[in-house]
Length: 488
Image (cartoon, rainbow, N blue to C red; front, side):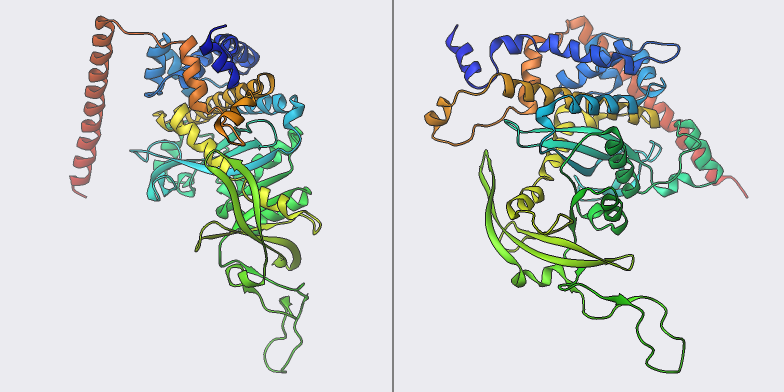
């Protein structure tokens, strides 16, 4: 064995494992190929091309780009993604079934809920509207998906992957006027679809995961979802634990509230009828830092050192639907002036290290979102149709799951040489990233090199498409211009 091969083995990816990556991807696709069959067609070959393109290409992972790189007819691939009625839900269910078939991942897994926004040039794309884009930090015309990630940091090198998602359609998309009806029909938005908030979508996906039987320790939300009393109530009703980020102005009680109808103090006016808290006043969570029990906790080792921050804890109560609900208030001090707050419905005996551990899990859906955009082409979709978004999301989930599964299996089957820890005088080695796995995959499944003629034809086609696009826009502008100028 050569020295280079020894180095790869020491770091947990021996040459034989890398050489089998292409076969692993083919076997992975084989397991899922039935998901892409309809009553009249078998589109699984196009699924293989699209999945392969997402995993190997570095850019232009739209229909035409993927088709050109993988050698399929662009129109056929576009039809498979935007029009074919294969079910994204079937893909998500099989991913969750495979997760459950991996016992090592079941102890200590968590669900993470977040959203991911992609900027769009036009509001004529399904779901596109002026809405907050977290990546840009402002309101922008964007398409927003709500995603669920499964993470488990107790296995070697950690595990995280998207497992399902939904497109958020703003309420304006359901207006009953002719313009919106026509647009919904054009983009294939189902007639029976009704407006659902992001919080509604989050709950429906959590509920679907629970019904599928996938076990998890807790579910974590950011502030948008965590401040929803309704969502917290839904999760409590199924007897699951949440770690819900909440804004700094969230009101809590430091002693158990007594809720009742206040006594009538005067014969004038109507007698009180609405229940109120009778014995104490609420306070903002950011006003009671000095009353918390603080402890500096080492949560985990990271490549940049250690995640070791001060955490504050206290049992508090909230009033939700006229009921007193007891929580842990967990506060993390991330810098001198930056604090984040969360409510957790775990019981009073829960160890504080566990609470701090849960509090820091949300990073891994942010990591998943970033990987999906930078490594899997999540934000490169150019299709306008509703089904195109659904299918692109399902294929991105598959690509994410393939990489996560590969990293997990390599960490299990080819552990890193412990001598590396001594050599570099560290206590943790960097885990393989999604970018690392994609680079290794390209080494065994290289993208084809174009001849001069092929490159010329491709550039010519792009120029032709740009001409068609400009002509179409000019035509629309012409119609709009003269329609606006027409006499009333």
